[in-house]
Amino acid sequence: MMLEDYPIEELQKAIDSASEISSSEEILEIAKAREKNSKTKENYLFTRDDLRFATPDIVADYRAKRLKCRCILDIGCGVGLQSIAFAKTCDKVIGVDIDERKIRYAKINASIADVKNIEFFHLDALSDETLFHAKEADIIFCDTERPTSQEHRKLDDVRPSPLSIVERFSGLTEDIAIEVPPFLDDIPMDCEKEYLSVDHRLNRLTIYFGNLRKEKLCAVSLPNEETLASSVTKKTITRSSVKRFLHEVDTSIIRAGLDSELALSTGTSIYVKKKRSLLLTSDEMIDNPFIKDSYRVLCVTNEENIKEELKRHDAEKVILRADVDPKDYWTIRKKYEVDLIGKKMIHLFINDGELVLSEKI
Ligand SMILES: C[S@@+](CC[C@H](N)C(=O)[O-])C[C@H]1O[C@@H](n2cnc3c(N)ncnc32)[C@H](O)[C@@H]1O
Image (tube, rainbow, N blue to C red):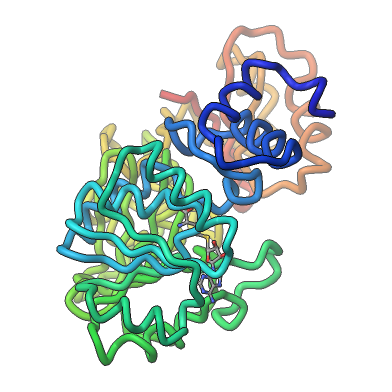
């Protein structure tokens, strides 16, 4: 889309808050990014790329509460969304970023937010100047830049390097928190790992050191801020056959590997446990912030009897809840749906040849 084709109201909004931004390309980019924005309520300046990596308000506010202190150093502050949240809980915030344009935007964003207790500097994380600013800070926070490809999941691919951050600043304070990609396979550091989800989808992984470290491993579900930590004496829950209810679990629990802890705390059993999915089962209905969706089990059947059972339960649509190749999804679904004349939407869980018909609660 060319600048002249862009809705004039959107451009006007971008121009109004960007008096220091002169190029039409930059204004157009800001307007396009705002159109995509679901991370913040404010009319901040950012490009689409900035927005992709920016911290959503809900995460920034939660973290600002957890890291409340007198003075915090925010390394890799980007366009400043997390710094602005810190400014509401800390007396002073120092934000540094290696990208000069982002620092320019961060300063404007702080004035849009009307916060006056942040100083932004265009600096490398590991420079002497950043070390100088760190002397004033009680807590060092660093939001790292992650590789865009999902193939890269190694700590070495993250910038600035978490290992260098800890090495560089731990002589000043051990109270360091670093955000790293949630799908990192191996973090060879002695720290707390906090997996955070928003609306049951894994969103962030933050590692905490020093006095900030409270647990070894924990999951936090936003917006309700429910927390579940790993137990010291790990009890492994054995798998069970399906009971009257099935429960799909928040991905922060799955990624943190806290399945037994959640089963114990909710009085449920594990029905399916795979790398990317976890289904709990119980005889009583449960209500827990880490439960994404619950289903009432209608019957357990097999391929031979499935059509008859679907008809008996008045099925019209059959939502597949199984590990199927996306390209085969509709072929399999249509196979179950053909000839159905009922009215109900059935959720079909398929596990090792066992077919569980259920209704979403
Ligand atoms: C995920 S973004 C930060 C987003 C930010 N927290 C926000 O809410 O907008 C990571 C930032 O790290 C910065 N960065 C990468 N390497 C750096 C380095 N060596 N020193 C300082 N900043 C760096 C990038 O420029 C980028 O802005």
